[in-house]
Amino acid sequence: MASQAASSSSSSGPQEHRLEGHAEEEEDLLTLYGADSGWVEARTHCDHLDALSSDLAHIPTPDTPCYRCQHPSENWLCLCCKEVLCSRFVNKHMLQHYQQTNHCLALSYSDLSIWCFSCDAYLDAQMIQQLRPVHEIAYILKFGEAPPFRTV
Image (cartoon, rainbow, N blue to C red; front, side, top):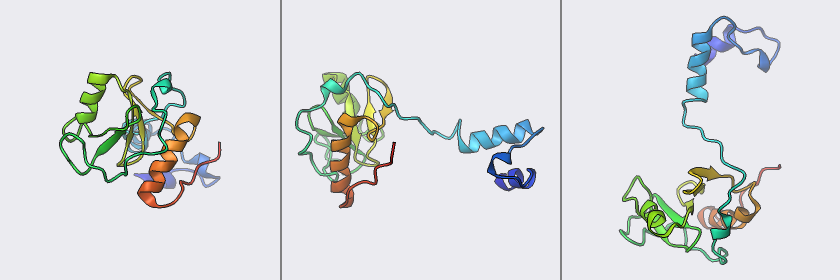
């Protein structure tokens, strides 16, 4: 379908790759590359950052199993108390932890994303200054080098 988009447009530049008069095909492209693809925009602000632990310079390593069930993967680090618990796709221990303690901030050891349960949203660890240090430490522990921070 992408080749249809390229062949049906003029060759005056990348902005010209629109399917004029082909609304259905354009909608299919949006579905394939955007709107329905599961892409989420991470928030650049969160009102719950006061809940962060005061000592996030020392965190468990990314290979730490869930503290409750010992599952070895799909684990999250609670950024409020530093417990490591499994995801909602395993035994839901991090979700239960939030429901029991209201600790709302967690870092995924799978992809190093940060989730706020209270906001029900991912947070941009590079744009939110308070999250950068723990994200960088987790990245170094996982990959052995500093993350390539984007310029803002």
